Length: 230
Image (cartoon, rainbow, N blue to C red; front, side):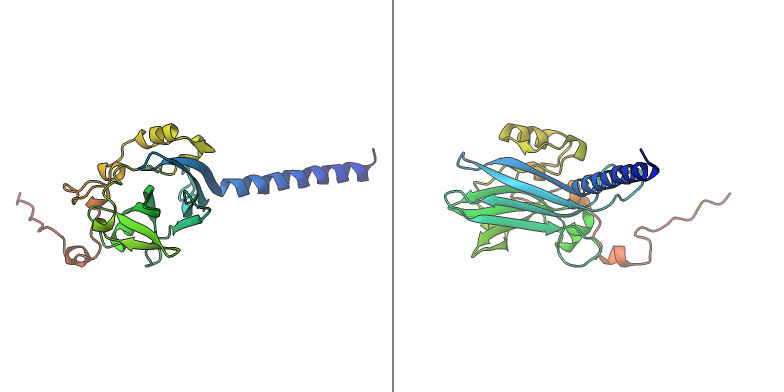
């Protein structure tokens, strides 16, 4: 084999490795799976979940930061495809960064319960307590609704959170999704849609109020006692 053939062969191998690297990198920039969601009437609806991911916050981080999340599903008894999307960006004042908890259909109308993802989002959304941002799908749009308009038959969460990338499955049955939700320390408001305010500062309700005069003041929140004289 001539020297030119050897160089060409090595360049070809290098090109293939680079293509594989780009492909693997592209795959790692998203997380997607299908999930069975049990509705209040006993039927099962399959939803598609997709996260677009950014980089790692720290050198030792194991998970990429989420850029946005999309939920897509076909409305039962119709061929209507519906999409819901939230972005994750704490650097902008716009309302975003929501974690979906429950998706269901009542009277042919989709409803979605979410909770702010983190303290910055919780303050952006006006510190709701119970800590939900609730939606109803009307006229081809998602509209935010108050808790009193969220159907009382919708009680238990039926959507999983973002799994660890190393444990991600391509498809979650109702049973597998339930096991995923029950794995770990989850606040009560994330398991069940509460109808009364959370007391005792559970979960994100304990987040500091960034807009309170106490936290915007340069003065210490509590008086500092002088040290005793020696």
